[in-house]
Length: 60
Image (cartoon, rainbow, N blue to C red; front, top):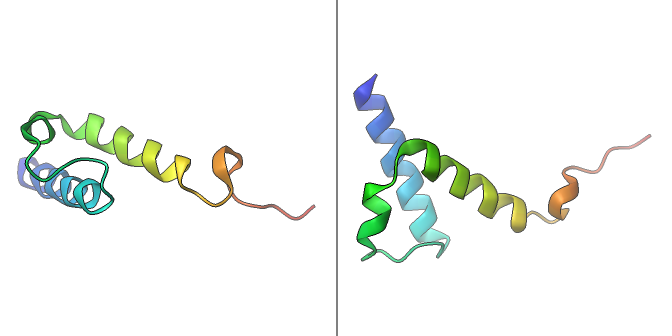
């Protein structure tokens, strides 16, 4: 379980660096818990989603 969490953390760190949310040299990033990384990634994706905070377009 611990190994999977570490892989997930590293994957999120790489995504956040790639998306320019964090700088590669930012030491703070490596100290963040998995839950914080997940929330940062979700927050970034919501802000940059083409539909904004409204989510997906739904046909009525």
